[in-house]
Image 1 (spheres, rainbow, N blue to C red):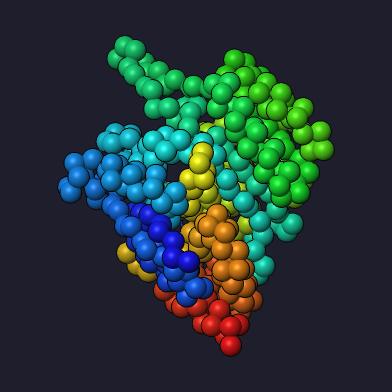
Image 2 (cartoon, rainbow, N blue to C red):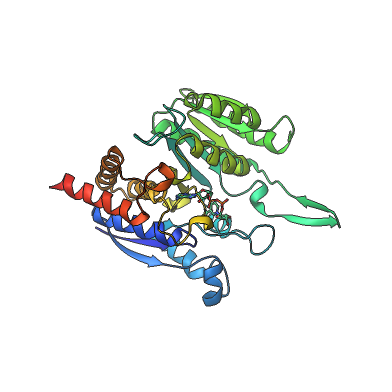
Length: 337
Ligand code: NAI
């Protein structure tokens, strides 16, 4: 079957890693018509906006997008296209599986956890203003509706994938109303899933415990900001940002698949970025498209390559982005013979 998929190459290392991932997915047998769109600063010249309406229309139609990272200017300039896309399409759940890949060096063994990050509100609502010169206010929005649906998503994910425990991460000792509402909703939803344990951690203690005993965590349920920060921390547990995938999921089966990492301007254009994080996001996409055999083929190719010595620099190797992708294609081809 031929799938129609929206492709957002993004900027920075985005075009390099998306090119590599499309190559591997197609080598695994994916037949796709790609509808490709620019976004962010690159889209402004052609469309006068960072998030063109045709891109959004394409994702509403295809229900599936593979997305490279997009740069957001720091401190000033346009608002995040990544946040804007999630809000525009109501991609309320950000799912980030974090596990030790075989033969990828890290400080820990046995990490196998899933981050479920609320994706539409919290301090990412972007509601900021200057009260008087020298005093600014950023509004943290937490609603019952969004907190309840992300909690339900986390428990449903745990039930479907045989996970045992959901841990809410919060700071409700200080933000009694906002984070208080978040955990109140999670507690309410937890009662509907008696077979799944539920517990809570204050975010600072959670960070300490994650770097001491990461293997003790299962499903982490977090509001947007803590989810963003804790995701990078967890990536550091298993080898870095080059290996952790993500899926932004919404209603009606809409999914935008992207890596946790950003546009990495420090290594952009050098063909040295690790495409594995986006490739593993591509594997999540294949499952979403119900192409599980293809997903298994890609994973087998990845495992075969990681069993050898070919790897990108972030993982201690010397392979370029394209050499790593070529090696996975060759491994899949050899397995198919
Ligand atoms: P970053 O994730 O782009 O980079 C952090 C560090 O990790 C850098 O040293 C980079 O070289 C390295 N790194 C990241 N991905 C890698 C890969 N695939 N292979 C090898 N090394 C990799 O985070 P940073 O520097 O904070 O953000 C850069 C830009 O990306 C910012 O404009 C930010 O807003 C944007 N960003 C976009 C995201 C998205 O599109 N979803 C997510 C996170 C950040």
